[in-house]
Length: 187
Image 1 (cartoon, rainbow, N blue to C red):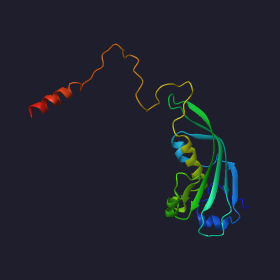
Image 2: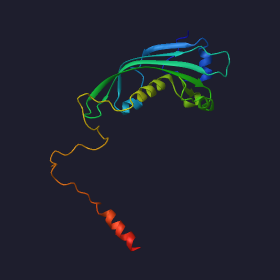
Image 3: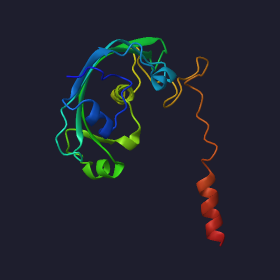
Image 4: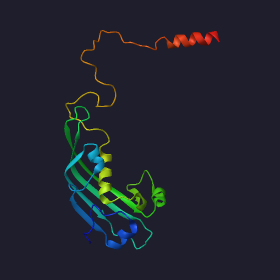
């Protein structure tokens, strides 16, 4: 198997079929691969070991290619409550079917399918796919087990320290319904 297959490899059917007629595989680290969307969110991948297998293509030049990705990583991101770093292990395996056109990939879209369809038109590299999958695995912000309460920037704010629970709640629009009903009865 040709081993010139790696993270910067563009995922396009025809060139992959020509360069790797017997399929290919890659195993390595994601440490040196730039992941700008993860960095923007403050997420770091430590000890990220990844693998990819490009299965041998069929003889039919119109047939899609099959790709399998695996990842074992330790990710660190800001805690959703206290914003200190929190770590989480990730481990997953995903399968993709690569089509030459977006129309073919869209037609293959099936919620019951075990492999996700992608196309040449998506303009992805192998490294981009890994970054996408890491982002999707982190569906909600991580937080420490000891950090209880609302997440930073989500939901209601914590009550101020000087707020007194005995103060009555102000309801500036409480009389609005009465005013509107009185106005309707005059019409």
